[in-house]
Image 1: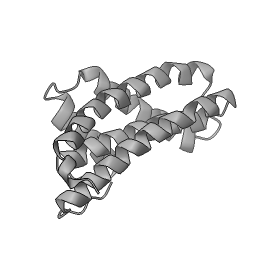
Image 2: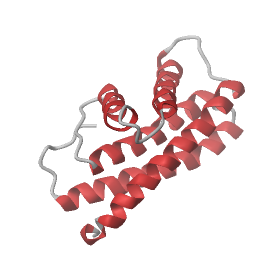
Image 3: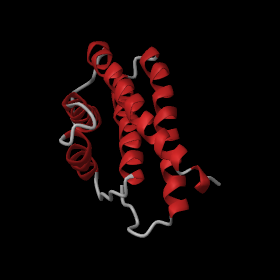
Image 4: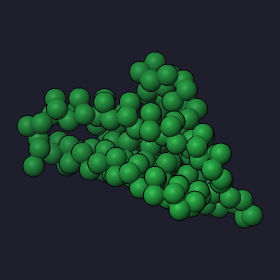
Length: 146
């Protein structure tokens, strides 16, 4: 996620609100993908739901990144190592990142019902926990709403 270093407060608010909405909408897509047995796509969407949530959190806190790896590193540095979120959330985010990478880029590899069933609850929990923090930030900054 490339973030302009000089976002106005309103731009920042709008982007945070948009990203957390994207996280929720992306989670909503997953049940259909699983029902159709599109397991690689489901794993990818699980990661992206979390990615949108994490980037919303980072932007809300004024933390800029330039890549998916940067998002992962900044989430760990500012929210996992500090104890704001449990260590398991950092591992889950990394595992979802790896699952997306594998499903999208590895030849002759397909996720299956078992692997996606293991990942899906973790993605939902991570998005939910981050959404709580982001929703608080949005409420505290509601005067910036469009």
